[in-house]
Image 1 (tube, rainbow, N blue to C red):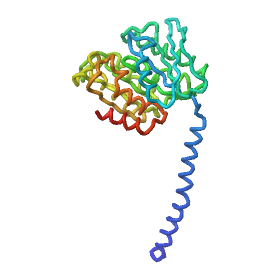
Image 2: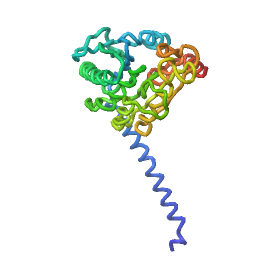
Image 3: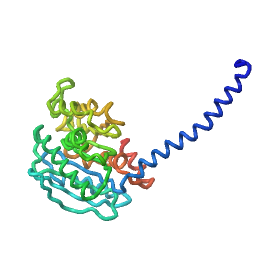
Image 4: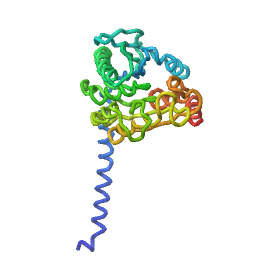
Length: 288
C-alpha cells in the first residue's frame, strides 16, 4: 500500500512544507523586528585616540567626514583624568542620532600598564555617557593603541553595561602585538588580549585596517603586529575583516585622515546614506 500511494505521501509532505515555510519566515522576520524595536534612535560613533594623542586627535578626520555627509554630526569630547573625573567640551545636538564622541585620557602615555588603565578609564567615561544620553547601541573607532583600549574594554568591561551593545568596531593601525615584528613571538599585551578574547560580543563586526609605507610597516607599527588581531577576533565575533591601505599618506600619524580610510569609515562604520555620486567616488578611492 505504501509503495502504491507513495505520491500521496510526497504530495502531503510538499503541502506541509508549503504551509510551514511562510510561517517560519514570518516568525524570523518578526523576531528581527522585535529585536530592532528596542534600539534607541541614538547610536553614537565613539572614537579613542592612540598614545600621546589628545581628544583633538580626530579633528581632521571629522572635518573630512563632514565634507560629503548628507547631515552634520555634532561633536562631544571627553578627557578622563587619572582620578576618574571627566572634563567635557562640545555638545550633542538634540536631533543628532549619530554624534561623534571622542574620549581621551589625561594620562595618554604608551605601554601595557597605561593601556590597561586607559581601558578602565574608558569604562568610566562610557558609563557616564550611557547614563546621560540613554543610548543602547553604538559604533567604535580606535587609532593605534586606541584599538587596543577598545578591545580590552569590549572583552572585560562592556558587560558592566548589559543593556548596551556594540554594532561595529573599526581599528586603524592597532598594534595587537605591540612593537614586535615577529610572526611567532608574543608580547604580554597580545597574551592579555588573547586570554580575554572569549569576552568579546559574539554579534560584533570588526574591521582592522593596516597602513603600510613599505608593506612591512607604517613607519611606526609593524604590519605583522596589526595582523595579530586575527588571532583575537576570528571565531569570537560575527565578522572580522582586515584591510590593508597603501600609497600616499600611509604613515602612522596620517592614517586617520587618509582619504582611503575616510572612505572606509563612511562605507563600513557610519549608517547614513550617501548620494549615489559620492558612493561611486568613495568606491573609486578605495580601489585606487
